[in-house]
Image (cartoon, rainbow, N blue to C red; front, side, top):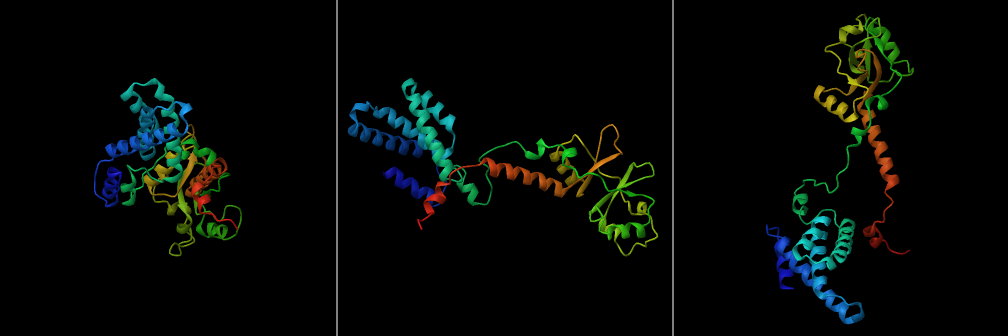
Length: 279
């Protein structure tokens, strides 16, 4: 009890201190106490108080650190008691589940999280790495010809036709091959006379992404190039535009991931249930 109180004061005050030894001490004491109580109430179960202390020690550390297998293996290797392996697995698994339900962070990362540093507790594959750019790109492509006048293009942009509201357009030559990308802002810039051709607005070569590249690669390429849209091309014909990939397409892919997560996660939030009051 004294160890528990001193440990709470140490952690609550924000000072740095060890957690491993106090967790083992408190967990072992609680496990032994519960084992002795269960043995007194149910003597026919044949509960070994020593195994109960071992399980309590490992379960306490599991709940605090969420290192399930490490706690089980550590306790088993320390004692070399095969009869304690099954209780260890059961007690540590229960502690792990309870910790996940009631604690956002582990005791090892709580202080870091309070400083504003996000500490992920679960690791999953990047969803954007699972989708190819060709599958997420907008099709069919609404392209502008390099020899079109700005008056013609501006009339199209204000016509309300399909694709006229896009914020960026690929520019192609007479053979339909990519020569650059122009934004809606540049097209509607009043400082540029309408007699100019679209090619006059091209300031750099087009940044492209291949259709078999992942959305993660495309997002990284957007950041490096400082652009918000990428023409999607094939590796065999790198100047033939197959689609346009924008930042909105990346967000749409994330929305798909969120919809799948919402559909798959059918879990019971015990904390919300405990706060709910009967009508």
